[in-house]
Image (cartoon, rainbow, N blue to C red; front, side, top):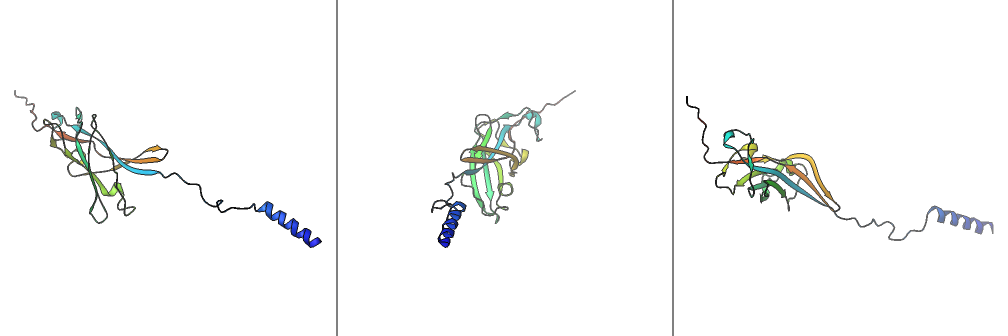
Amino acid sequence: MASSQLVLITSLLLALAFPPMTAYDNVPAKSVEKTAQVVVEGMVYCQSCDNYGSWSLSGAKSIAAAKVSVICKNYMKRTSFYKAFKTDENGYLFAPLDGFKMGHSYLDHPLHSCRVKLVGSPLENCSVFTNVNYGITGARLRFLDKKLRWSNYEAVIYAAGPFAFRPAYCLLNQNIN
């Protein structure tokens, strides 16, 4: 009888110490997948004739519907992403890199692999490319620790530019005494 009481007490202690488990107890709750996206932002301007030949953008006017491209190359120097984007009515570029994939975590990172270049201006009177902030040769992205977050969406925002086109003809102010 003592042995049956010992078995009963042991069983009770074990039941209290280790509650019964079902097959679903170890299954983690279904997590909501977050979409992380890379976005490039910047501005495009028409450089004032007063600043011809410089990188100054004082007096510049923003250009709506200017085209800018984002080109990314993988660690083997092959183009892995290319897309052209248009600026909004304020000359602001918001370029989500849909389809951008990193094959190598460091070498294919957008900071190292992507460049932003001017493609075209819709303004006939301001359509000459400038290399302000490397708009012709390709500007590297800058990380400003800026993110957009919603419940199931996250965007890491990189900056480039500001870029500029200039008028084809600028009248020079000549002081003749």
